[in-house]
Length: 284
Ligand SMILES: [Zn+2]
Image (cartoon, rainbow, N blue to C red; front, side, top):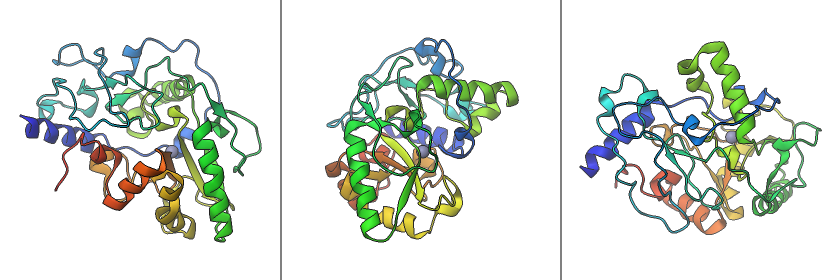
């Protein structure tokens, strides 16, 4: 049963791979009024009972348990990835090690309480939300940027925090334009973007070239990050070749703060956060 369920999740994730956090997500600056109840972050209900409305626990710093007994069944029968009904609302969104992905959503009401402006360069000059990070991540990214600079690889931030409301406004605008099914192929559903944690940041070289674009892969900045990010508590959250697990193609620019112990472990084991928490099948 466990194996069956895990395979199911893998299939679902494989079906829902979309373009990542940057790119088309960068445009909107308007704020959506009235973020609705958490049920709005869930996908269309299916035969699964109480889809999306069942708060469940999520992995925290110490969690190594399997996903709950959430009735994720027969995804192969699901005609589209949006009908999986398997989205769980995260119980401890403030955890530094919170796992946010397409099946683990932040509550619509979640707003980090310790957002600050890290003292680093960005590719834009405005002092706006997307510069912000939670205090611990801000301090860490300042050190990471200083370390990169010292190694002759100056970096710039592209986009960090994004509120649920902003993500919702963005997503809703895409839905209006392209319909929900298509919008989901290139934009994160509100609650499921890691940028909403205040612990993630997209970075690029100080020349701003290839910001949040595929061409960032293989640059000296990307190579430096692969090698050194974990020393500062960050992981490359969407590594190459792991799209079937993370749900995202390779995003060498997207850093997620998890603390240096876990970051180093994840890097040493060459696993994703999902694999680290054993929430998806891992080929051992
Ligand atoms: Zn990102």
